[in-house]
Image (cartoon, rainbow, N blue to C red; front, side, top):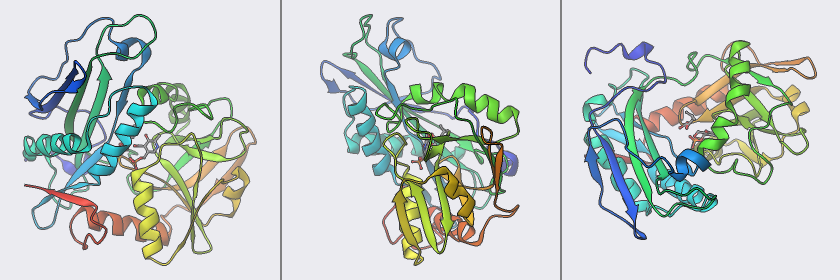
Length: 337
Ligand code: PLP
Ligand code: COI
């Protein structure tokens, strides 16, 4: 992996050496297995194929300045996957098993962790799927949990350069009391058409409004939304958005920096009043936004071509903890040895 051009690497799939697998049969999870195959062989009637019975996660490992590899907040991802499992009736994977699988996946692919300071990191993708055959709509009796990894660069090609978002009211990502709060594939399938339209228009993502009233900001396609004004970090509270672990971390950092934090409904008109806005997530990290275009109202909100000072500070702090440059006072990282 040594010769790779890490500075220009994008967010895409590439093969690492090994992936981890764990099977659920007869009501229990088996041992972790190590595989070097990129494929899975499964029943044509598997519930994941027909009825979308699957959940996934996304987390990252970073090469530190001290040469140690740190995984960011894996226990939170383990717990969120359990929550997704509850949502679509899959058996929970124990947190310790999830964490052990993450450690093993990173350890077996250490040479794929991008070097310190290059801007890239190792993306870790856990996936839990229903594999048992059912043709009636009901939960599977058998499951497969997997983790594979790959080095990635920024999700939005601009990286930490501000990008544009698009509001379109004719698309919903998730129903008000549906599966938006779970990390399940169906939400992402539902976002493909709108996402394609946004990308064709030169936008990095769709900014979804709440599906019930179209009055409040929900989140971006692959990330939570935040706005900053009057020394206050404001992020939407909604039943249909994914509880972002990055956002949870930034909220803590904002509080540490002495900012006020508000988690509440954010009316779309409030976009006018923000000094800085951004999208945040594991893949997106903190992506500053320079322009939001509301296509239905033909209205644009502008935030400047450079990242705002508080977004820069939050980004720098978060990345410094991930890289082991700043003391991890909240205990967010696990060193893989
Ligand atoms: N919202 C959606 C829809 C996502 O897919 C993601 C990515 O995981 C996020 C928000 C950000 O969540 P996290 O910070 O836990 O990666
Ligand atoms: C992540 O940030 O980990 C995501 O899952 C977002 C996207 C790639 C779906």
